[in-house]
Amino acid sequence: MEGRAAQLMGYETLVVERRGPVGWLIFDRPRSGNAMDGVMFAELERAWTELDADDGVRVIVNTGNGPAFQTGLDMVQLARDPEALREQSRRTAKAELRFTAWHLGVAKPVIAAVNGTCAGGGLHFVADADVVIAASDATFLDPHVSVGQVSAYETIGLLRKMPAEAVMRMALVGRHERMPAERAYELGMVSKIVDPPERLREEAQALGEKFARNSPAAMAATKRALWEAMEHGLTEACRLGGRQLMSMWGHPDQEEGPLAFAEKRDPVWQPMGRS
Amino acid sequence: MGQYTSLIVERHGPVGWLLNNRPEQLNAMTAQMREEFADAWNELDGDPDVRVIVHTGEGRAFQTGVDVTEIATDGLGFERYRRSVEDNDFHFTAWHQKVSKPVITAVNGICAGGGFHWIADADIVIAASDAQFFDPHVSVGQVVAMEAIGLLRKMPAEAVMRMAFVGRYERMSAQRAYELGMVSQIVDPPERLREEAQALAEKIARNSPAAMAATKRALWQAMELGLTDACRAGARELVSMWGHPDQEEGPRAFAERRDPVWQPLSSG
Image: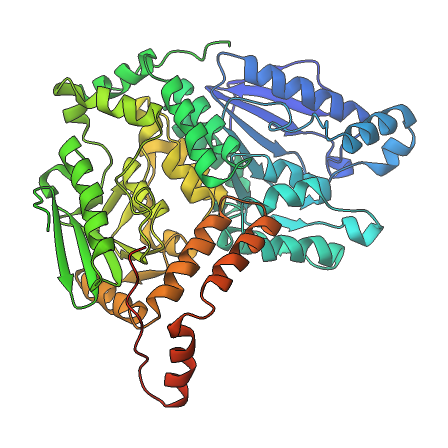
């Protein structure tokens, strides 16, 4: 991960940058386990939106600086910032959260690269990513119930995506047990473990670059189809998926793809339209 | 019995076999093949001697989706395809055809793109140790929807999304498919796949056809509903077996230490 990163300025709690076709959103409060305070909540909304709108970005990788990936709410900081705490409580109560890619309707593929501890609210970013990889020393836990809080959104999201027993165990065992990266891989919560852990960003960039070789419009429609499927019964989900299929008909990428394949060259895709 | 050119339909004991038979084209599906699928599923489901259906492919691929050459060249292919998507009118998998018997997909090699329809829509999936799975749709500017939507109900979602977005630039091994629970058995050496599929099907064929049909309805219906509704609908399937002769025959045969004699599945 040497050089050639274009840093997008104006963030205090995040590092937001571009490496080739890959946009990076990096939690940057390492001394607080990258926990979210009022400033970070606002910056996350802005960063996801900025990267999603940037035509140069085709895939987004989300990771953290320091030993933790993300550890949820920074209760210490929020206790000193009653305005931010009130706003976050209001959004939680009304299910109007706006800090993950899913909350914000990000159209591009999102890879979470879990670099260390992922605890409690940190699981939001695992549940709401499309693809998740992890450093071999990453650990997962959900301490909510150990501090008298309810675990809901994050674990509900995970229930749709992986074997349920493991989710319930994490939710109920609280801080008294951690799931190692290896178990997360076995369960399909993550699709790759990177060892040594120092190579995590390199691997995430390489995976992001593979995604970036595919049609941006087809990926966006695929993403809509698959996430929409989590809202509906199987038959209805397939019917709605048919609409996403049809949405690509007549798009230049649908001709370019097979043509490039036949001519044994890399396809030249249309940038994603603003719709 | 139907006449098939792009499929082979056979019976081995209580097991109906449906084989994709366009090995030179990696079993890609033409309009002809699509129509044959509809007939073959109906034929095997309607045959009272068939209790379980195994689906596999000839050659080095299991299935690789739609025959793109035909769609591009015959002038009609895309029009037909368009109509079926617009009308949500599909007839090429067991699920589309509402097959009531257990269906085992035996993946004999490459399964790519649209080939996942028969993984998503089967009840049970086993694979040869050299089988490979990938979904190249987005690499050729196409959307993946139904196949992956089906898979999302049946296995960890992250793996489905990864395949959907990585396209043709990565393949999933049979081993990983097994770890993730996408398949329940890997057969090694690969040449023994059909033998193992037949053996598994014969085990399944020893169970009550009526009880299996009701169980199949209960479990697939559950994919349509929230948990409480699914259990309520499942209870109706449970109750549907009450008074059925198999419900007395099963415990009696067990007590008498003999194989039960089941009622054939009524075609109703």
